[in-house]
Length: 157
Image (cartoon, rainbow, N blue to C red; front, top):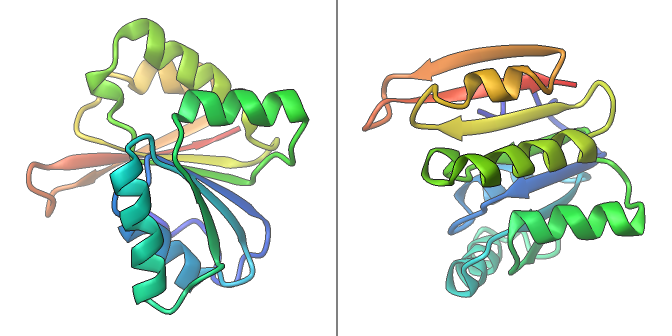
């Protein structure tokens, strides 16, 4: 999932839906100079993400906020924050209603730097057309070793 992010990358990375921080830890190890901002709506999981970074000896390498992706993206837009080169997401788009998914994809498309990449882990291809409509290129890679099988969308703006 993180293969397109160069080792040692030192720009801005946004992670949506950090969960317990497994991907956040990998990002922090792979890109120690990157500015990683991760959000997790569940306060318990956000605390778990912070703890995972501490346990891995990566304290201070990522900032975890306990907020929704929608709120974080809206706040970034309001503040005119630096646009990330990479947005990595584990959000369960397939579980959201069509309107919420559409609004999220619009916000993600607006938040990412031109030429940047949106990487989405998903268990279905239901949102493929919606993602493709917002990005100049899209590659979908199956993850068959995952149970259940999943896909990763790599979308470039």
